[in-house]
Amino acid sequence: MSGTESCPAGTEMAGKASACEGCPSRNICASGTLFGETGPDPDVAKIASCLQDVKNKVVILSGKGGVGKSTVSSLLARSLAKNEELEIGLLDIDITGPSQPLFMGVKNEEVHKSASGWTPVYADENLAVMSAGFLLAHDAALVWGGARKNGLLKNFLKEVEWGALDYLLIDSPPGTSDEHMSTTSLLKDAGITGAVIVTTPSKVALIDVQRQLAFCQKVDLKILGLIENMAGFVCPKCTKESEIFRKSDGGVEEFCEKNDVAYLGALPIDPKICQAMDTGENPMDIDSPAITKLNIICDQIQSYCQTE
Image: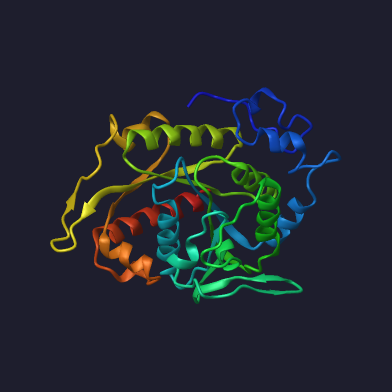
């Protein structure tokens, strides 16, 4: 990737510098929504304090919708939580399309708020989940502007009582939006370990990933690697894999090599896993090549986090 100027969020040049050209969050930065005229948002320090016992904060990104980012996020959380010695958190900030309550089998649970903050819902003894989906009726449409979504995001980051976590996975909306800019800015002092980008083999998906890489570079967000989702189809009878999408020129691996980004691996579609997630069941015990590959990818992410 060619070099770009660092993101000036939090300074008087926010939204005005040449590095802001083409950034989807230029207006929100320039308006001072994230940072006031007199300095950084005081909530940044509160968020850092709230998350001080979270060792690794990993943002899950995708260049476009429909590539299975939320599915992969929940599977990564499940894979990490297989180790009972680890404490895992999954934060769903895809505010207008929250799906983690369904995927994690806790869609009918409620979030409880006390004087000290929100208590997340536990999908397992060592796997806590927080999502806007817990705050809405299942069929409700959330029509909010940037300021209200930013306010809810702040509350998620500064008021949820996660306790001590080894990993907090943050399932973000697709593309590059105000939520992404807000997340990176608000977690500035807390520190983000890095980002994992989910894509499919298609050419149009990789075009959008290229924009995602540019965004990460602008905001100085380290990329832990790319996951190639829907890389094939696992037959539910014979468990053999078949390629179903025509790969772009060179494929995702070559794309990663050209952009100096780690290729974490490929996940095929397995109908048995899809069915389990649609019903909120834990798919980790399913005998599938996809689960085997998922666990290998998860091990790589842990290794990258440990070197940070």
